[in-house]
Length: 368
Image (cartoon, rainbow, N blue to C red):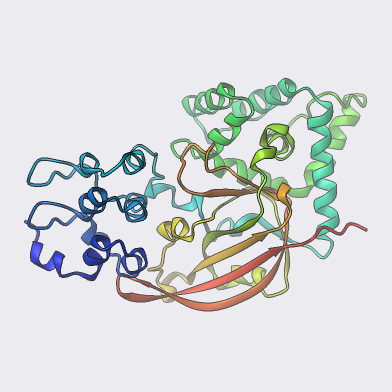
């Protein structure tokens, strides 16, 4: 049985009871989330019953247990003070196993290229992709995604392939976002790997396709399903209301060598989608702060992205498979300049953890 007296004396417990999110974050210990007090309540019970929206959202993001019953036989959801609290319990939560959705690992090092002429390359790539959406009927583009790409993905079994197609076909083109953000499929991993592997070379492959077709520019390019997928999200009119500018966050657990790509004043261009959040807490939920630097040489990093061009990112919070993550999806071929790189510390579980903070500012496009 849990020692309820030690729980009620903890700083984390008191912070949750007093609706103090900052202190709760700084003193968060996973071991205390499922402990119960003398009445059988967890901190989730208490925050739910008192209507503390930010605390409840924070606890659910950190996968606080929902099924524990207090001495009256009630779970936290049954104590919800209002409808807004109840709605939080009905929102999908990204599982811990999907940690690399908001946090990059060394193996993918954020899928960025470092170019001196990145602005020109970005412009030419985006213009090339725009022509597909303008000249090729949408259904032809989707057919190539299904038949020429998804059906050939050896990393997905038939059930996963059908799940992606079902999601994308339910609401076109909104379903593309649903498929990308669905954690049970993890399609985003494969898509981003394939986008990054080809990178800017897709233009040469597309041009060869055009030659092979006898210069029929109303046909979908073959073998480029991943870039067609991206082209629709970047250019389809449906997504215009979701264009976004502002500040968002993403994490990395990378080596010192990887960090050299992000030296101050470096110019980098994304080769894939980057999932970021307007709420840094979402990122910190999945960032490995306990990395043993001496053992595997990985360093936790928090990147701050400043997006200036509305067409460079989408606020997909309301159309994501998992809502309530304040997700901003940064699109492929966006150019950033590293404006700051510094050491910092984060207080978690009443202990300090080293992190590197990197700020990246989108470049104002100059293609002259």
